[in-house]
Length: 71
Image 1: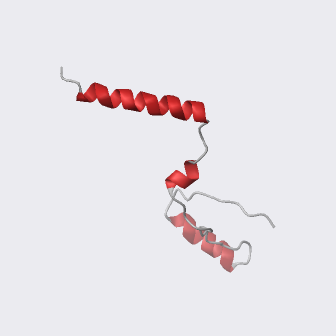
Image 2: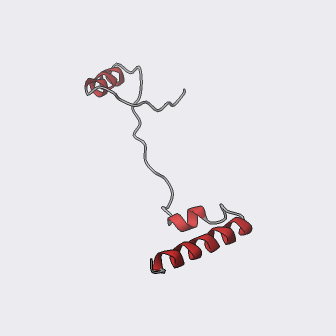
Image 3: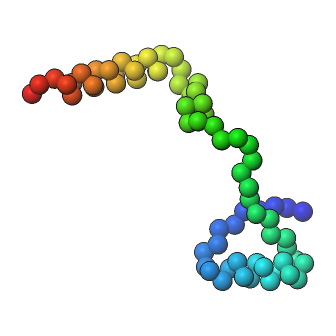
């Protein structure tokens, strides 16, 4: 058996798939998310090396001071 994911592009497509399931040609399986959802910060932790993170942090600090500067 092989499991595939499809995108339905027409409203009648689901009824066609249900008909195929009734004829025992296919079996419809609903996708469920498994696992515990994590915070975005936990997901992205470690994605930048320390040098890039320091450079980015320095750039952000400089950008903020530019906005506070009077023109």
